[in-house]
Structures are given as structure tokens and as C-alpha cells.
Amino acid sequence: MKVLLVNGGPHKNGATNRALTEIAVTLRKEGIGSEIFWIGNDPIAGCIGCGACRKDGKCFRDDAVNRFNSIASGFDGFVFGSPVHYAAISGAMSSFMDRVFYSGDKNIFYMKPAAAAVSCRRGGASAAFDEINKYFTISCMPIVSSQYWNQIHGNSAEEAEKDEEGLQTMRTLAKNMAFMLKCFEAGKSAGINVPEKEAAVKTNFIR
Ligand SMILES: Cc1cc2nc3c(=O)[nH]c(=O)nc-3n(C[C@H](O)[C@H](O)[C@H](O)COP(=O)(O)O)c2cc1C
Image 1: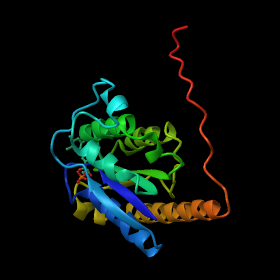
Image 2: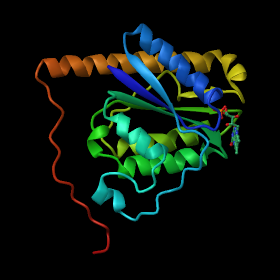
Image 3: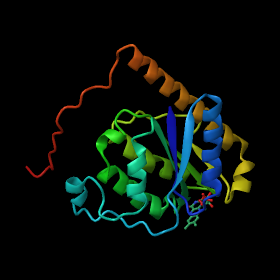
Image 4: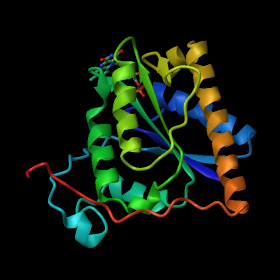
């Protein structure tokens, strides 16, 4: 089993990456593989709602979003990490997540455990944490929790290293993710399959 850890910050080896690394190391101890996917520093445009992805199965902009979607189906769980920018997730991560969740094959995420992890200097962490969790709850993804809201404090990896509670929160999160993945696997072996989806009903509140 494998977990994909997304670093939605501008620093490949910054505070967000430090939090994700703590998760990766703990997952390994639990016998779960993982990979860190950095969204990078090239511009990531927002979704323009053109609907091309619904026809072509991928976004017309060939960037980190399509790269992510092309590998994501091979993973059993996800952690989306972002630094806090103005009490929200980074602008690039917001565009990235909008387009990943809108354009990707919905089965990539269906009933796969997910967690948010945020890094910040001082404030806005829980608002950013809430923002990421909203993508999971609209995608039938069971949320993995921890002993605190999943946040680490520091402006850099070195500062984050000093946040002992933040690091412990990440380790607990990883252990809980591993536990959930193993439970799901055991359930599958026992013949418990993910629920069959009804055809989606969409009402736009216009009548
Ligand atoms: C544009 C911008 C806005 C920021 N806004 C906040 C903020 O609202 N609250 C906060 O505590 N830190 C804020 N920070 C600091 C970052 O959240 C912090 O440095 C983060 O841990 C960096 O993570 P990274 O190294 O993964 O990029 C901001 C940083 C930038 C660049």
C-alpha cells in the first residue's frame, strides 16, 4: 500500500515538506510506502470551467495537475499539504486542488483515506486545514484525523523541526492513516467492498 503526499508550497524542502517527511518516515515504519509530489514553482492556472476535461478525461493545460492525475490512481491514500498564505492554502495549491478534483477520474479518490497538513509561521492554520478537508468530504474520502488539527509551525524546515508537538501530530496522523489502510485492506479480504455509487443527482437550486 502506498500514500501520495502532496507538497503545495513554493519550497521543495521547506516547512510543509518537513511535515510530510515526518509522515513518510512514520508510514515506512508501519510498512506503508509513500511518495512526495511537489507541485513546483511553475505557474498553476485556476480552473476556467470550460468542461474540456469532461470530454478529454484530462485538463487541457498540461501541467502538474495532469502529472498528478496520471499517477494518483496507483495510490491508496492521500495527504495534501500546504503552507498557510494569508490564512488560506497557497494560491497555487488552491488552483491545483480545484483542477485535480474537477478534472480527474472520480474513482482516483473514491473511498480512499485522506488528510490535510498545513504549515504556518503563526496563524491561519485551522482555516487552511478546513479548506483542504472540503475537497475530501465532497469526494467520498474518509478523513484521517490526528491528536490535533494537522499543523506545524515554522517559516522553514529548520524552524518546523523545533515544533515537537507539530511533528508528533504528523506521526500520529501517519499511524492513523496506516491503521485505516490496513483495516480497509482486511475488510476487502473479508469480502466487504466499497459501496456502489448511485447515479449522481444534481439540482442547481433554480427551481
Ligand atoms: C504569501 C505568504 C503569505 C503568508 N501568510 C501567512 C499567514 O497568513 N499566517 C502565517 O502564520 N504564516 C504565513 N506565511 C508564512 C508561511 O505560512 C510559512 O513560512 C510556511 O511554513 C512556509 O512553508 P513552506 O516552507 O513549505 O513554503 C505566509 C507566507 C507567504 C509567502
